Image (cartoon, rainbow, N blue to C red; front, side, top):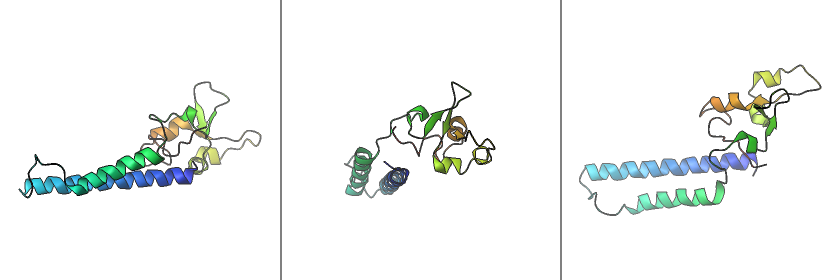
Length: 135
C-alpha cells in the first residue's frame, strides 16, 4: 500500500465512521421525539452505515493495532541510540525543522519517531500511525 492509498483508506474509514455517528444521532433524536420505539430493531439507515464501516474495515485497513514504528517501512534505527528510531517518510521529514536543517552531508537525518507520535491526532503520522506501512 502506498502512502496515498493508505491516506485514502483512512479518509474513507473516517467518512464511514462520521456517517454512522450521524445515523445514530438521527435515530436517537427520533426515539426522543417519540417517532419510533427504542425496543425495535435499528432503522435501515443505521444498518447501512454499520455495513459500510465493516466492509471498509475488512477490505482496506491492514494496519495492526497498535501500529509500531519499528514495524513500519519508513522506520530506521537511530545510529547513536539503541532505543530510538527515525521516521524517513517524506511527509514527516518535510514538516520537521531538525531533519531539514541537518548539516551533516554524509549522514542525512530522519525525524524522531517519538516526537512524531507524541504530536497527537493532527500530525502527519501522529499518535495513530496514519502513514504506517508494512515492511
